Image 1 (spheres, rainbow, N blue to C red):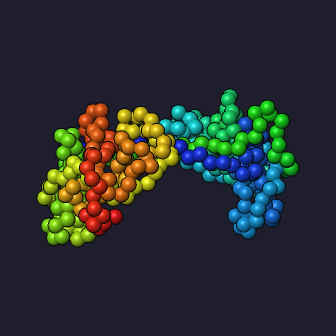
Image 2: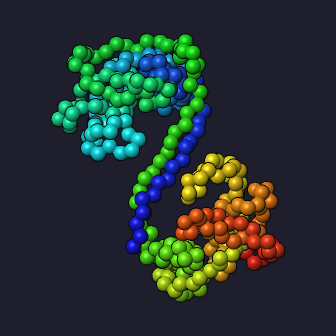
Image 3: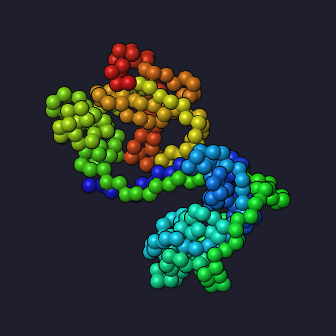
Length: 320
């Protein structure tokens, strides 16, 4: 069986409303802001609508950089992108003046050094940009043991910093995992290395599925008979993509580009792949295409037009 580490990563860009903008700008200026609800509670982190009444919230308040651990969990093996590179505790901290808790890391030598009720304070990052990472982590606060803290103070949400308010962020969504493709897909991947595309035929309905999954999605029976398909195929439908991405060789793909469903000759299921070698606004249903292999020749990097006449709609309409 094949196994490989895989990463799915997507940089999500979002604009900020007035409350989130003030909160992140405040972190950059070493100030923690919350928002007061209609019943007087202070929410940290702040939200723009009351979770109980859905009322719009704009009443910003400043809370203390100290607080109390309400619950925690020990993290013995930090992963990429987490706040600390050594073992630490994930903690929910109710900052003094707040009624809700903030999730972050607590830097302590071991799990015996933290408990519910531990008093902590913010350790600010040396360089702050207007992100939750401006709080580097929490650390124990020996000076305020048992102190309940100050009340929240009204705040305008405006700061005099030259950089101006934070109006948008880029959040890196990332998933690291190990993928085991199984028998059918392992055979499919190995065949690609030989510039061959193979599917499997259902013994009942006789349809050929590419990539194979080891079972017919229609009949639910196991599939074992291999069938070579393609390499050419027909674009059945497509979309124009305006989000930046990279190909398998980590080279940037110019936007806009086209991602399409392609019915390979002899297959009864369309697979998806990128279309190149043609202006994006000239890609069309019925376009005949062929694979262009990656630099290491292990799989098709994209598909390009063959120059053949377009396929008749009736030949691929059942695969839409």
